Image 1 (cartoon, rainbow, N blue to C red):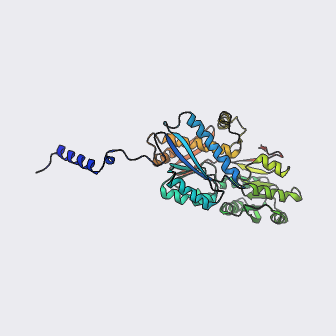
Image 2: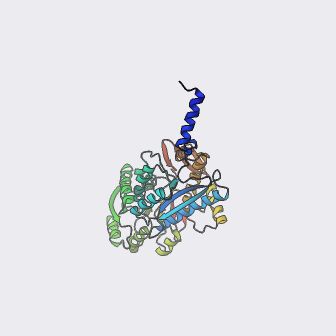
Image 3: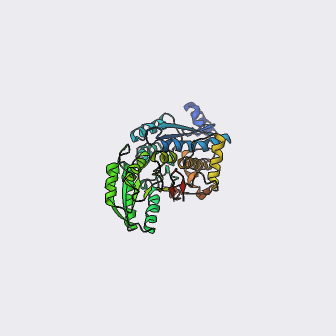
Length: 386
C-alpha cells in the first residue's frame, strides 16, 4: 500500500526528528561570527627591530574598528581583533596562524607583516578557507594571479619601484646600486628592481645584501661607494635602513638615496638617531601624508585619533586605518547572514571607488586594491616634503 503525500511527509519529518533536532535548524554560523561579534585575527611583528610595523599597523586597524564598534558595529556585531606577536619570524607566524584558525576560530585574518611571514601563513589560510585581508606586503609574486581568499589594499612594491626608477630615468640618472634585505622580501624585489631598471635603461652597477639584524654596514657602504652609482635604491625595512644610511653617509654625502614605503617607520626617531643624515632620503609613499587633512580620509583619521586618544601617528598607522575602513565595507556588503563567501563577494562588489578620496579597485579578477604611489623627501627632522 502506497503512502499518501501527506503521510510520506509526516514519516519524513518523524525520521528527521529521530536523527536529531539539528537537522531542522539552519546551518551553523561561520567560525568567528556570533549574533554580537565578528572575530578577526592578526599575527605581526610586535617586538624586535621591526616592531614599529606591527605596532603602528595594529593601532590604525584598531582605531577604525573602535569607531565602528562605538557606532553599533556591523549589523549589530562588534569587531573583536585578536593579535599575536611573531617577532618577524615566519615559523612563529605559522604557529600563530594555526592558533588563530583552530583555537580562536577567527572569521578572517588581517594585518600580517612581511613577505616571508605571509608566505608561511597563506597555505594554512587557504586550507581552512579563511580570507587573508590586507597584509603589509607589496611583493609582486602575491599579486600576479588572483587568489580568491587574498585581498591587498596597499600598492605593490613593483609600482613603488617603477615610480622610483622612472623618476631616476626622467631626471637623467642612468646607474644605480641596490642594497637589499637578505630575506625573501629583499631577494624577490631585487629581481623586480633589476627588470624595471632594464626596461628604463638604467644600469645596475652593484647589488649587495644586508642582514635584517645588521648593526654595521661599513663594508657594504664602502663597496657601494666604490661602484659610484648615480643613486642607491634600498630594498629594506626598519632599523637596517638607518644602519646603512649612517655608515654610507659617514664618509660624505654620497649618491642620492631612495627607499620603499616600508623603509622608515619611526621617522622622528630615525631623524634623531641619524643626526641630520636622514635629510634628502626619497621614499615611495602608498598613502597620503597623515598630516594632509585636506584629504577626507586623513581628516577622518585625525578626528578619530583625537576622539579615541590614539597617540601613535604615522604613515603605517594611517595605512592600517584605511585597511580597516575598506574591510568594514566588505563586511557590510556581505549582509546580515555573514559568511566567508559573502565577505569575499562583498569585497569584489566594491569595484572602482574612493574611500575618503583614497582609490580602491576590486573585482572578481582584481584583488590588488590601490595603485596609489607618490615620492616624498625627508627633511632633517623627519618631516616629509613632496
